[in-house]
Image 1 (cartoon, rainbow, N blue to C red):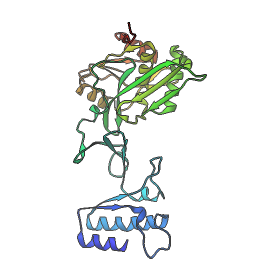
Image 2: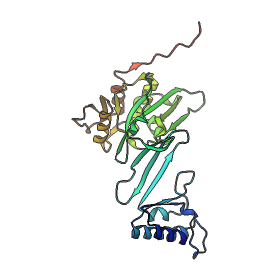
Image 3: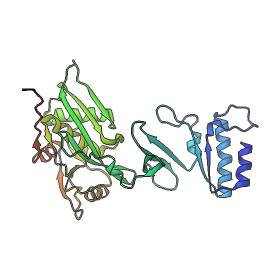
Image 4: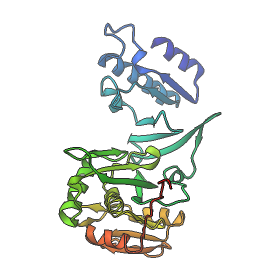
Length: 312
């Protein structure tokens, strides 16, 4: 640690990267590198020097398998901003997520794509999370999720099929599992869809984790459309939280969501009652209950005709 501080004082760089904080140690301390005392003292010394010399300092910390910062939590409390760099090893895009920021909004999101020359910024992230398939398929709905102050148009895909097991299977990708169970229970109790005898699979395209309640309406309509084998209008977006009583609850940042949908060429939007906005270039339809939302979304839908793969 003493050597690094001497180098920073002599070089005075504009930006410095410390990789990693768990490997640094003060020789004056007897504790092992990565311990609470070592992390606290090393981080404090680096922060004091960075503020004194006006250096932008990035401290790299290890994370656990669950995605949390490994080691003592004191590291998160000392720094100004905590950034998580996320990505799926099977996908080309990477997400830079802010979960703490003393000088700005939290839960901001930056989207990058891994190319041959390194990371490149994605100027329109919504294109990553939307399907470009020419043929529409049943059980696909589009929502507008907000990550911090950035709206993202995300495509949700659902598949409902008869179960082959004593208890039906439920599977999610990018959607909270318990949230799906809750929505399935509401659909069975309030709408009358017999999902207790059906397998249900829901996934978000692009692998984006959608954790906010505003995706509830899209999940519910996608599941209902898959059950009825209906194709939802591809120019329709669905925004709203589904309550246990079957009601559609208001969500935050509605104006931002509708502007993003209008910018990408969507024509209609289903929103909770009382959240209608004008001047967005969209036909905004208010719904108060999930059964009304499903009826409205599937009113002009088309029946999917499966291909005949049987041989003559």
